[in-house]
Length: 554
Ligand SMILES: Cc1cc2nc3c(=O)[nH]c(=O)nc-3n(C[C@H](O)[C@H](O)[C@H](O)COP(=O)(O)OP(=O)(O)OC[C@H]3O[C@@H](n4cnc5c(N)ncnc54)[C@H](O)[C@@H]3O)c2cc1C
View 1 (spheres, rainbow, N blue to C red):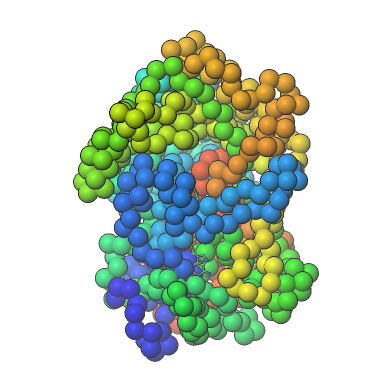
View 2: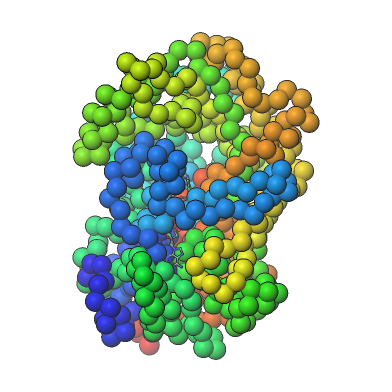
């Protein structure tokens, strides 16, 4: 059954699982759960299906971000520790969710991250437990290794762009004393994630791979799968310890409907919207609900707390001679190469002008890196240019030190009873001095590498915008830091009282409510988090399939 259009079927059909949110996690779940033909699933997504070429073509991402296409357009509150700035918090609003608008980097994180989850009370989430699920997601197109998956739904490819600047950057890493690594996702248990490496990207035969394209689009005709798009879930109705109904708003005119919940409901609306929906439904911190005017159903003080994100600064440099990406941005070439990429997945527009990661441990007593370095071989303002009128934009490159394990944690809150109102997102970003100190170290490392003799032929002599003195740099960090768009932790799993979700991802206090998305991370990981969300959803599918099978037997 493809997209559900006959609304009268909504209440005559019995669904074993209703999934809220068709993003990274939601599409994995819907695909895996419907492998069992006796299990029926309804997936509800606020956004639409999109085959937009700017989504399909990897380099289209620049325009998607600039114009905020398919985005929820969320912002943080004014952050005193960021010189009172609001920062943008992009989130995908379409089938595929944020995997359809992200930067496509595929990073599992450090083995120690997951051993840390296990030690923090998340039973069954050690690296040994989760590594098979990372493998299960992947179809790795790079050098074979027994630790990598080759027949999973999600294509992962080594970065394909080439530029002598990238070789110089790797040489600079080496001469600055950093290790270089071949495959940062092929780490056996107990191994450290440390060093610089070419990036791995969720690109499939030249096209962006999203959770929708990789997992669900090809299975849309399964009779037990139902997808309701352009539909916003506004409230969950609870009766004692079960969720019994779902209030939804359909389409642009927001037609209201109520769906019965016969089986279980899985919340996969992402780290901002999952806690927000729960609070709207009366589950959350008592004081927050009271001031928003939402009647309390269950007091759960830690829903929306423990919000973690990766903050980063962007250091830009000018480039001496124009690089290959600059040439490709000539308008006549774009006019030829964009359709080539959109239609056939071929040509330079299928390759991102960057594609390198570095992982650095500042504290050698810890077994996970403190900083990640993202390298971009083009300036942020790169845009098509036409030779008759101009020589094009000034070429450049950028280095982004990312703080991987911030000590500053924020929170998400509901502000009133209107389900279409955006949540209040207070990140408390960089409010702890320790976080600023680590970013200062990151800037030092990046500047040192940019000054390395290997970079001499590439970096121009223009004065960089990063101040030289400590006080100036601290202010520059506060003035320019942005998110790397990795929010998580807002409905954390765990075995202690404080965690609102169990290690089997059930919302405490209810028998049939599960949370499966980035909200459940107990703490963040050492790298971009999308691969981890896929892993969580793959592992959750196994729990949930097991529940369904035992229900069938009873
Ligand atoms: C700009 C950007 C760049 C990024 N770059 C990278 C990267 O390079 N590598 C990486 O690993 N990670 C990256 N990420 C992060 C990564 O993509 C996300 O962490 C991941 O996709 C989150 O998955 P999720 O399932 O938790 O949420 P999402 O994928 O965001 O899915 C949530 C879904 O729920 C829907 N929804 C929300 N509320 C409702 C409701 N009430 N009713 C119905 N539907 C609802 C949303 O529309 C959305 O489709 C990036 C993210 C962004 C935004």
